Image 1 (cartoon, rainbow, N blue to C red):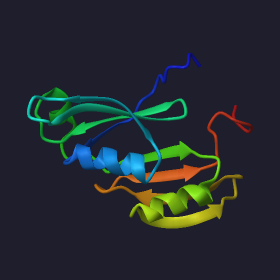
Image 2 (cartoon, helix red, strand yellow):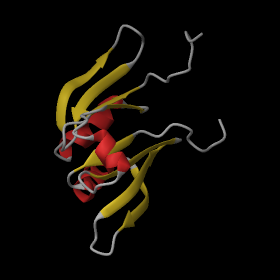
Image 3 (cartoon, rainbow, N blue to C red):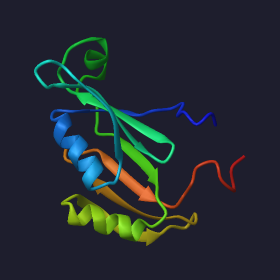
Image 4 (cartoon, rainbow, N blue to C red):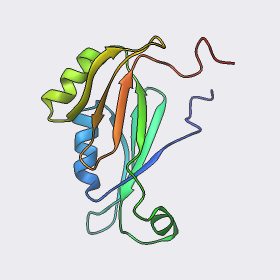
Length: 135
């Protein structure tokens, strides 16, 4: 790995400012770049966790990408965390909708699921893709 993510999911939100607040406060992502138009509309935002990045922007802004995505979604995003139980409590305390409590999985992970303010599903757990058992 080069230290720069080579795959970055892109999510679209009706209210990107509210999404940035929830994803940083409830889920612990770190805000990086945030580009706004003159009227304050979020054009592009980057949120990081570890060496991963999620990019997001607003729905209905027009353009080829917006039109191609149409009404697509929701999407699912998996994030590796060291302590799913503590992470879940943080998310719950910040008002996130918890879909499943932290639980041990048959493939060795401990994880939980939550839904963000616009219906995207986030799973936080200890499973690290590319680890043992791959190949």
